[in-house]
Image 1 (cartoon, rainbow, N blue to C red):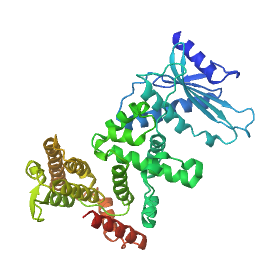
Image 2 (cartoon, rainbow, N blue to C red):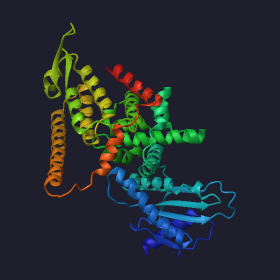
Image 3 (cartoon, helix red, strand yellow):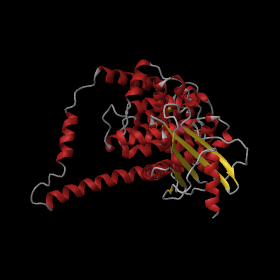
Image 4 (cartoon, rainbow, N blue to C red):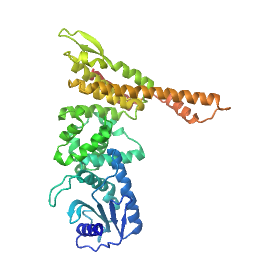
Length: 433
């Protein structure tokens, strides 16, 4: 009875002066969403769709469903389908029974203008941010940053259609990468569809890069929970949630530029095998450090950080190795990408003169690295043994794989566009050295 009273108050508040049939409702499987719509078929589809979108958001945050604020969705046809100025309204309100998120949708002659997915993500994020700290009646509240919402949308879209890095390749070719502070401001929608598409692509890249950081999903969840306290200061919020990125705009810009260059090359080059990646990584784990004012150098392994961190050239050497690790990750085998990410963070901390927890990080990276290489060998040996000894004729199970491998080996050389990107990345690597 209390839930029914809450929903009645919420739906009437969301659509003042309109006749809403409170019996025409569907409740989603998690019971967080209550959908009101006179079209029973549409109502059922929306009740299923909102749960799919919520799962996508929670998966990105590495969270299980623990909602506390109900979300009431009202869908109504416009009285004049050609004149719908505000197709969607979203607000977090206090009712006599507690906080409620109200999402009102007015459907005109172009349903695509509603963009329901976007507003469901906004609503789910509101619940996540305020479930433990609901605002009081009349108190201002913050919504999730635009780049989080757009990044989730693009990540879902590219999961279904595949990642397209062509936009960033063209930007790198023309040397027109904008400052990350401009991207975070997110004025693309005000400047037209092309600018909005670019901002959305950057939002997706930022979200992906944050997730790839150590404990990336947990830190992203922390950032979203604490977003109301950030008061719109994205750089400060990112620095608190991801300390390794850096404390100021310059550090963030450096991290963004290097990683965006890597992202732009993600679809362009054939990656290294796990074994080749491991060999390249091993070279980077031993490096020269300047030991005195004459420029004399001595070679150290990263595990000997306690010995070389006392030297004047230690921080500079660690910074160079961090950049080299980032460059390697552009072509690294995906199985060893977590190892590279761990070592990138190790060198980032050493470049700042921090050594606390470094030994544990190195140990964890090496345990994972060894396990991956050993497991690959065991799988390959087993498959070879099985087909050689347990089958009277070749299985043909790997024919498609072999055909693909041969096709890649016969792939034509880089196009002029690809050569330009390679030249740009080589230039960045030379500058970092």
